[in-house]
Image 1 (tube, rainbow, N blue to C red):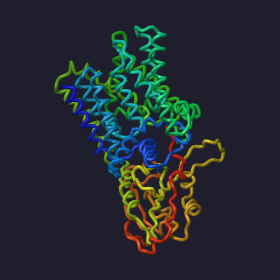
Image 2 (image 1 turned 120 degrees about the horizontal axis):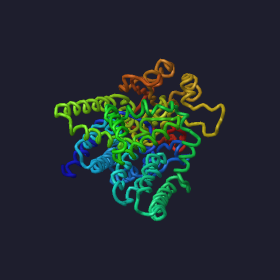
Image 3 (image 1 turned 180 degrees about the horizontal axis):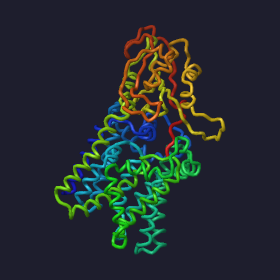
Image 4 (image 1 turned 90 degrees about the horizontal axis):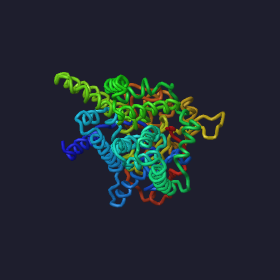
Length: 527
């Protein structure tokens, strides 16, 4: 196939995922990217504790800020465009990485098949999370890696990876050592003329961007490493046993592709003397990454996205060698099995599981635009959900008051510390009594967003409201704090349309809105 045709096929698949994948995955795809970009361009938006502590780099969200700025200049920055275009951009990036993967694999048909059908790549490939960028940059860097030759082009991508997210450097340690050992360039010239200059240039540019974003000179990769690795702040949000990535994380990410991956691993060990150096070094890189990440208590599926292209390469290589001797009937049986085995999780998780928290946002955006009380007060929305369950200003695009339960980690080592969300769920009625005024009615939030599982516990509070929307969220629940439906309640008072005001109301001094800057607090800590 011609390269242009293959790229267009890959792009079509990634663009399909933009419109097909309608569910939420992790808070980072909004709170560490679009929310930050919205604040950069429009001056309001929520910054989580990672940004106030300086452990996140602006290099990633600045890309989306560029899109927002262009939309703003041309006056077409509606919510639809603000939420859709960043995902389309990410789809283009992923498609280019897919194309580089195809080139890296010597344009084999199996490589095209496995990268298109990977359920996890389809599920995450158009999401605006930094881990998706990690996977794309890793794939591109691998395609330029000098398995034969002396090119150092790959180092630019590796340096960018390490700056954006320091843990991305882990898979590259064995690969860079392999490069240094086998390069025909002498050690010192290679280090001082290539590795260090490229690292310094990327680090300087990234630090310059962060200086403009954070307002002070800080080196975000160092702070990231200190808080997330040395201080292990991520364990505040849960921990898993050391073997989790081996028995749960990687098998679920690979899905049905786990079987050909294991066959490739077994074949490599069985024929260690004749196995190609590429297969062996990739296995070492995968094993090193899993071993290092296993030593960190807080674990997530998305953290191993950077090694997914390495695994897919081994899967494609295994299927290519196997298919040379297999019958066409058996080959087509495997193709159908892999296709169906990947389509099922991609379809269910992309269309149905955890869709309520994203589908509710257009409803809230409309409320923020149109809602006004008889006194001219605008919407004031309270989210009674686990922190960061939904996106925020990037999906509402109106500077109204939004209040949610925070979950900042214990950054001060307070022995009696308890996050706000934990305090709320321990006694919801008590928290509402102390944090939400019961009188007058006009001082209460105009709208409340919650999961249906919470409804029985706050019946008295909700008696001041009426339900205006119910959206299905999930069939099965991971915790008792999540519900099957997302509910939106509106306060029982008189309201007018967004353009309807009496002359007496127009003379009233509007109530000062609470700017988002005053609400800077916390979110789920992620490694």
